[in-house]
Structure formats: structure tokens, C-alpha cells
Amino acid sequence: MTPLARNTLLLLFLASRVAAAQTWPTTVAERTNFDSTSSTAQVGLFLDSLQLAGAPISVSSMGRTALGKPLYLVVASDPAVTSPAEAAASGKLVVYLQGNIHAGEVEGKEALLIVLRELAGARRDLLQKLVILVAPDYNPDGNDAFGPVAQNRGDQNGPAMVGQRADGLNLDLNRDYFKAEAPETRASLQRVYATWDPALMVDLHTTDGTRHGYLLTYAPPLDPVGPRGPTLFVQDQMLPALRTTLQDRYHEPIYDYGNVEDPVNPKSWDTYAPLGWYGVNYVGLRGRMAILSEAYSHADFRTRVQVTHDFLVEILNYAAAHADEIRQIEREADRQTALEGAGAAPRPDLAVQYKPASRGVEPIVLEMLRATGDTSARGRPRYEPTGQYRTVRIPANVMFTDSVSRPLPAGYFFPAGAADVASLLRLHGIQVERLEAPWTDTIETVAASQITWLPHEFQGHQLVQVTAIYVRAARTLPAGSFFVTTAQPLGRLVFALLEPEGWGLVRWGAFDRLLGSEFGAYSGLVYGSGNVRELPVSRAIRAPKVPMRSLVGGQQ
Image (cartoon, rainbow, N blue to C red; front, side, top):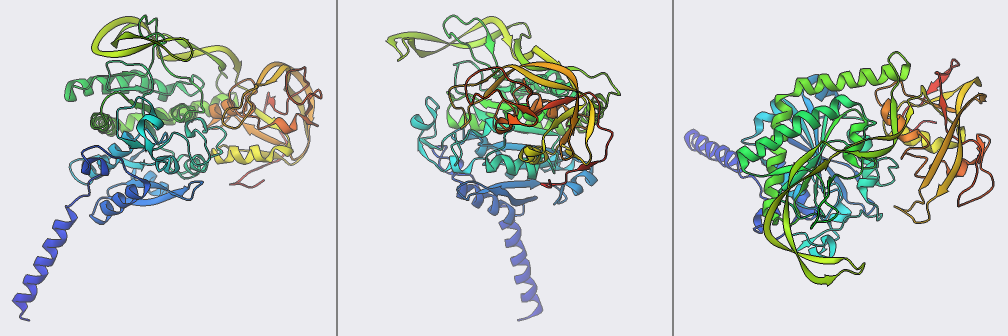
């Protein structure tokens, strides 16, 4: 072969490689004209094809589900970033995008795949400011439990076959962030939150309820216990700007997430619960920014994918444009939270019970309904949509405030017998210490005037409700006891998890078996209500002044 022929073949080969590199894969939704959604295997195939085609991504697994399926985690970066340390060194903001936690709500999964493809092309410039983590299929077991949409998602408008809400353990993953029983939750805590520490998280869903006039609704973190700076930035600056952009640039109406109780005679527009069991609220407790996205279930599948895609793109644009400001706000939140716990700044009163708070009376667009003449099994009248809309002015209850609050303590003590609780706190990234010598001090013991195990199971638990009386008394904490300080960046999360009257680990029954321990004997009843003495969790007025050993990893 002559040199000219060899060079010609080489040029042809290189040209074919370049052409192949620009042949980006399409999603199952795109290939089927939005009649179908991707299985977990098809998600994996798309990601592998995208990477092989030259996209600036790395594809790994953050863990395995109960049924052994991979939990894909994609890192999009340019130049390549392979570790949290490299991301920190790059100075870029880390953003985490999550889809399909409720696996029948499928447009988030498909929109994320499209966004990943665009990051290889027209939107690659976003990677100059951001490192983007993507879990497109957070619930693979639920995703692959395909069934008719009417069976798995009620009134959702397509596609024909979708997965189910629960994971392979029949858990609702968006109620699992505190107790972290599901392998998906444990993997994300370990491989995403405690390592990459994303500055912004976006959780993608589909609505279930009210017929309204918005293609997508959204919410910031709602738990008022979280550091206020990051949440207020999302609530008061980021989301209003995104709403304006979606309307002006895409002609897509979006609004705060909510529902009305009576669609014919609405009294208020009410958001969802502020509990840290939910992912977005949990991230707020960590002092980071988060956004809930809820595409309108009555819009068709193509429209839901499109508006979710557009919302994601503009979130990324906004985060890139405000990266320095976001980083500064979160660093200040970390600093202030640690100072509060140490007593170097005033310790705030924080909510253990909540009540809705209104932003004011606002115009809300609702679809008009007409009575069918039938009634539901509960005797309520049934309605059908008309395709016509009206605007009503009602209170927008889109935030919460405290109805009962308790002061932030210096920390919490609990007994050596609760090593499993200590391990769970470490999984959350919380600093936990063990006393290496007895410590005698005045502490706040928690005597429950009433403790009740609720009669019906929720997520496999009989939740515990505590009405507490706090008493300051001298106590000797034995060596081996655990101490969790609030003088750390995750101090507000410590409060949410360990405050006995709140919605944390006591409520989930994490200390049930210790209610007869040396740290506080239960009065003898096993279930029901009755008087108790001290709970196994006590509140520290000051940090212990004896040697302590910090737990590392799962060490006890």
C-alpha cells in the first residue's frame, strides 16, 4: 500500500470515528413517540452509548437495590472529575439531579437522559461552572415493575406502561431519608451527600392531585428547622426567577406546589408536609439548596418531559450564573450552625411541630369541574374535568412555621446500647463521639408525660408520639455513652433526628428497645399509652469535659 493510500485510509477512519462520536443515542421515549419509558437496562444502555460516543460523562453505580439492580450515578464534568476532592479543587459547584424516586413518575428519568446528551453538545458550557451528578433512575426495582398506567399511577396521562411507587422492599423512598432502611437511601447518603456534598439537589416527580392550570409545580425545602440562608435563597430568589423564565422563554406556566381540598369551592392552596423524611426537606436540613419538581400528571407524557427538561436546563443556568453566591451562602450557613451549637451565637428555638403559613392571598389557576352525579366509596361527589379554567384568589399556604418549638441544645447523649443509632448518624455524615470516662453534669432529661405507639403501621413501623417534659437534673453518663454535638455544620440535622418530640429517630422507634434500659425505664407497658420516666435520649447543656473518641466510618 502506498503512503498516499495509507494516509487516505487513516483520514477516512478518523473521519468515521468523528462522525460516530457525534451520533448521540436517543431515549426510549423519543424513539417510541413518547408511548413508552425506559427500563433500567435501557437506561444503562443509553448511558453507555452516550459515554462511548464521547460525552463528557463517567458512569458508575452508587450501589445495588434489594433486587440486585444497579443504581446508576453519572458525573458530567469538563475536564473530567472523578472524585469529590477533584471537584472541590476545580472550584466548580456540585449539583445533584435525581429522577424516578417514585418510579411510575417517569418524565424526570427521560428528561435527565436528554439533558445529559445536551451536556455533550449545545449545553456543554455549563460544565465550565458546574459538576453535575445525575441519578436518572433512583428506584430501579420500582421502575421495572411495569404495569398499566391506570393501575400504577391512577389518572396520570401516559405512557401506557409504568413502574410502581415503592422500591423492592415495598418502601416509599421519599419517606426514608431519616431512617435510611432502603439500600437506595443508604447508597445516596454514603456516595452522594456525605462525599460529594452537592450544593443544590433537584428531585423530579409527577403530581397526584388537584386539576390546575400549571404544567409544573415546585417547592423549596419546607422544614423551618433547616438553616434559613440556603432555603430563603431558593424560595425568594431562585424559584421566582425560574417561574418568570419558564413563562417568558418557553410559555410554560409553573407555580408553587399545592392542592385544594375542595376543587369546587377552594378555600386555600396547600403545599405538602415539611418533614425531613422527604428528600428535598432533608437536603434543606443539611444546609444545602434543593428544589422539588412536580410535572402536571394530567398533561401528556411528551409535554411533561419537555417542561421538566426546560425547568432542569434553567435551574442549571441559574446555578452556573450564581455559583459564587450559592457557595458563599452555604459556607455561612455551615459557620453559623456550628457557632450556634457551640454557644458562640444565640441558640435558636426550633420547631418540633408545625403549622402552615400563608404567603398571602394570590391568584391560583384551577380547572373547572362539573359533578357527574355519582359518589365515591366514601360518599363524596365525583367530578369530571371541563377543559375550562378559572382564576381564584385564595391563601397560598406554601410554607410552614413552628407551632411548638424547643431550644437547640449543645448536643444529645444516648446509651452505649444504641450503637445502631450511632452508625446511622455516621451514615448521615454526622460527627458522633463516645465518652471514654464517666461524665457528671446537669443535663436536660426528657420525661414523657405520655408516649403512644400509633395503632397503624406506616412503612413497616408503628410510629411513636411523645409528649415530653424537660427537667434539668444532675446525672452521671457512663463511659461508652454516645455524645452528638450540635456544634457542627450538620447541627440542625442533629436536632431534627434526635429531638424526642420531633419527627426524627425516636418517632421511627429507633430507641424502642431501650425504653427499659438503665437510661430510663419504661413503666412496664409494651404498647399503648402510659406514664414513663426518662427517655434514652437526653439534652446536653454543655459539651462534656472528659476524653472522647470520634467515630470514624462505621466504627463503634
